[in-house]
Image (cartoon, rainbow, N blue to C red; front, top):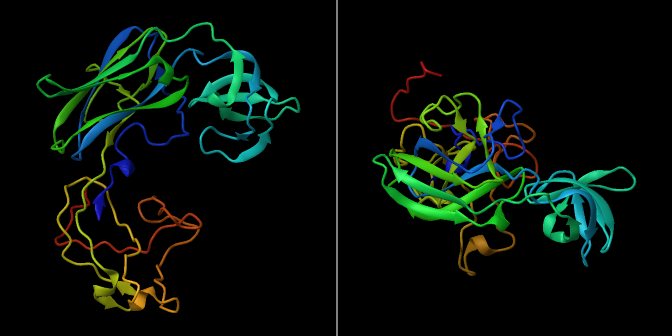
Length: 311
């Protein structure tokens, strides 16, 4: 059992591939902007924002694949495979996103290949004027952490994660991210108040952002075989209290057992875990590691009554 900040739904950055048309870009670059927030978790270690560079990766035109074949995907990073382009192939570059070039083949098919897989592209008309600098401030304005992102790591229409040494005792504290944005770079903002616990420059809107956290410490663990059972259910009782409003995750992992143990025998019974294949009823969050979308079969019990009036 651990806190799971990556699944916390309260921050404006929620879905990697969703670009809400209601959001917009800050006008131009060469500016400083801030975003205040309250950290729900300890070990605060960075921030993810969305950036654009006004076509700073490449200009539309001919692109040449390098000396190795490259997979063309339907979406950048994790899209479905469309075709593998041979070394030395040519395509028409249309733009870029997430450090990937959007290309069109002679047969009209379009997809994405990594920018670094291309031997040559049409040079862009402009590039970022300098690095993007980020500072983390506490509620009193004291700078706690600083980081700088070099020009070569700033890509058009992309997510940018900036990391720094963790702030261990961050839970429940107010912070401010300060961004010194160079000319030729801009940040994505929500045009509405999508994050009620903070604001951009004290205005009514917010950056599209998500705090980044280092690995969360273990809250509790137990051996499944040692837990009491009720029918098909395993009961895990006396788990520790967790902070209100936070997200936690339960992980089931194989135990390391000695080679002479019964559990190490090939004919030992395997652990069967109840899931909901094809649907995700519990909180709308799919479980990781399943063959198809679904959730673990979970019943959450509480030590006292919970006020549901605000839900």
